[in-house]
Image (cartoon, rainbow, N blue to C red; front, side):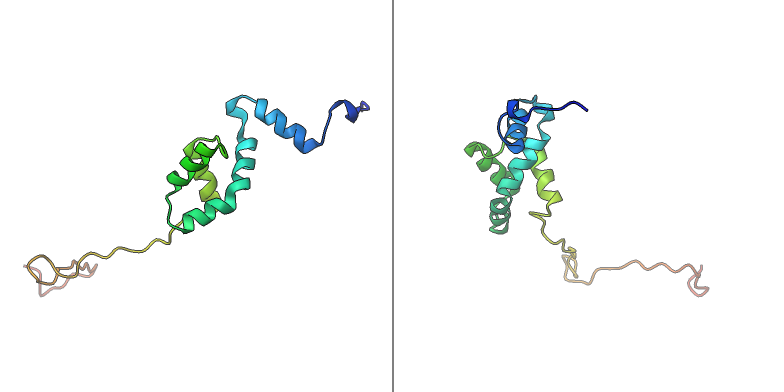
Length: 118
């Protein structure tokens, strides 16, 4: 195993990694994107809790230069961190139709009713 002279590398590993990621081509910047997201995660969570849309938060962060990732990447990070999720509620249709009459429902039985046949 070769003996590496770490003094030639200059600086801490974290600094060197960040510098390398910033110089990397766009398609290989996922590490930098994740680090940028984690740096603003708390702010993102707070803004989403206040009711701002995910897209509005991303646009503001991008304008400020805090993130440089595509919206889809930002959205994926938010979802994986379970940010911006609203509890799903089951929508119920109206219980009465437009004429004020109760809606008809369909019920199916696998056993035929001999009184209702023909």
